[in-house]
Amino acid sequence: MAKKQDNVKYTLPREVHTKLIDGYNSLKAEIVRSYDQSKIYARELNDALKAMKIGDQQLKQASSMMGRVRQQSLIYAKELQLAHQQIERSSLNTLGVLAEALDARDHYTSGHSSRVTESSVQIAKTMNLSHKEVEIIRQAGLLHDIGKIGIRDGVLLKPGKLTEEEYDLIKQHPIKGYKMLKGLSFLENALDCILYHHEQYNGSGFPEGLRAENIPIGARIIHVADTVDAMTTERPYRKALGLDMAIAELKKFRGILFDSAVVNAFLINCKAS
Image (cartoon, rainbow, N blue to C red):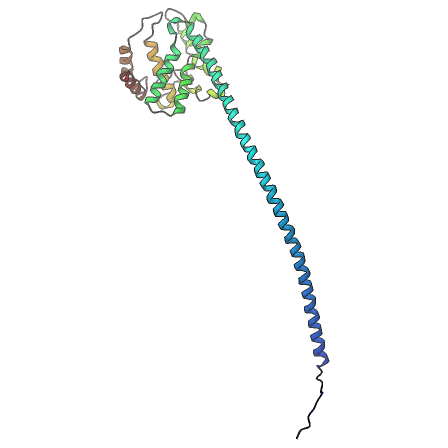
């Protein structure tokens, strides 16, 4: 029978023991480093959260301030727009007074500009032009003859037939009007209508001899309204023609001197009235 061995101690080999101690120490060191790093991350995260709260508050403040600035800007923009519109109305009224003064130079043509404007606007509406186009035509109609201010009375108010030289002076009034109004930005869209309102559909008009669709629609409309008013108004060198005769002339030269669509719209208005 084997002898019982009590109190026998088992000792790890030195190299194994050393490896375990070294492993434990390494693990402990790694745990300490991880713990320290986690504390650093925790502080950084906390700081980041604080910064986000501060940033969020600042962002809200900035957003609120921007909202107030935007609202104030809208108010200023509206006030500026109203002021600009008032300036435009005042300027147009002033020019309208000049047009009336021009008409008043000759009692035969008194009210010519306003009649041409009214007729032109009605034609434009009948042709279903846009509101913007109608307003451009309204401006141009009112001021279409403004260039005649620069023509001396001896020519403009001459009771007899004009000489060729005098007629050439009269033919300059669209160019003179264009140059007079060129610097007014709110009239920039009406300038071509003023410049070309004496162009003929077949290219025989002035100042540039434009043809057909190359003539702005507003100018073609004013040309018809202007011609009708000239024919139906008494002049020092001839009696006024009746509206029926004026209409007959429009029909005769429809598609030749006048845009057919514009003449047709004018005739529709005549029937409606």
